[in-house]
Length: 86
Image 1: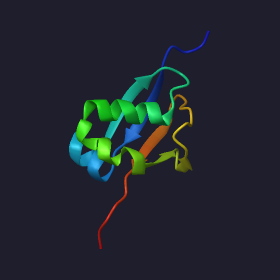
Image 2 (image 1 turned 60 degrees about the vertical axis):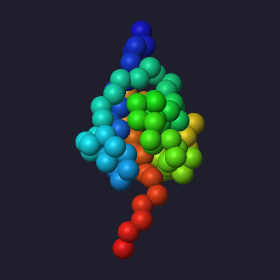
Image 3 (image 1 turned 135 degrees about the horizontal axis):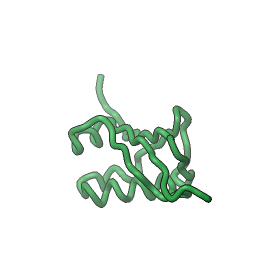
Image 4 (image 1 turned 180 degrees about the vertical axis):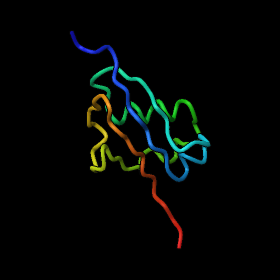
């Protein structure tokens, strides 16, 4: 019998961490959930992040991935917004 949910750690950097006030989230999703679906959920929770949606890159377990990548149980998903600084 397939698992009803998967657990994913979402690492937050830059603007995402500023908005949430914490460095990571641990969430449950249904199997086959994609990176873009998780990003949409995060933006639903904090609409001020919408302007970063189209320019955020993604990493799963230290590998850059596309937004249509499906998550698996235990994955570490990182949202990587553009970062400025010196």
